[in-house]
Length: 232
Image: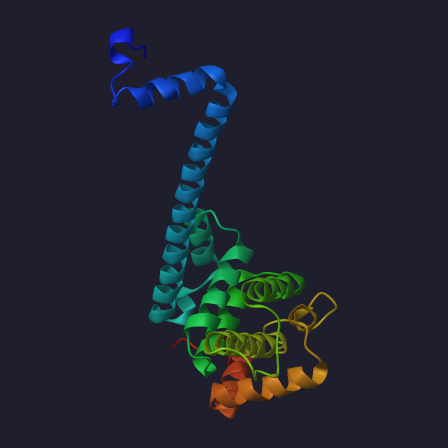
């Protein structure tokens, strides 16, 4: 676009002339700015797509569990993988993280997660790495375990309390032989930065919050011996 000399004095034209001159003086820089804006737009689109796929995955798994645990099998998980583009470890990790954050940690929920783990047919070391990765993400987002919560603001107190709660749930799952064998690849305590004594304290709190532990143990044993119970 070019402008005549008669138009150069017009206030409304001056910005266009300035832009033209800027492009002429440094076209590479201008092209870089355009590319950066396009990259930002692409990143936003990818982020929105990722959120949409996450919601679809979690909603689909919830709906399958509502039909009965037998509906959550390997072919059903493979279908979700194809529709979302996620790997099996992504499917399991995302649903575990969602469950730990959003659902009450009770016997039914624990048995659901055990069933999902079995249906995925992942190896024990892969499940251990899923728990490790969930732990890393929690620590990156909320920080490590802090046992003494005095002196925190209300917001900081809630955040650190949430970290303690999530750690207790992950530790409980990691110690269920039906869920994950304990080998050297599981480093949840190290990631959260807790001592054995603190881990025992947080584990006990999680068990008390889980409710009917005897019922949970019976359900876990039944699922291990006879296949997972059909109701969620």
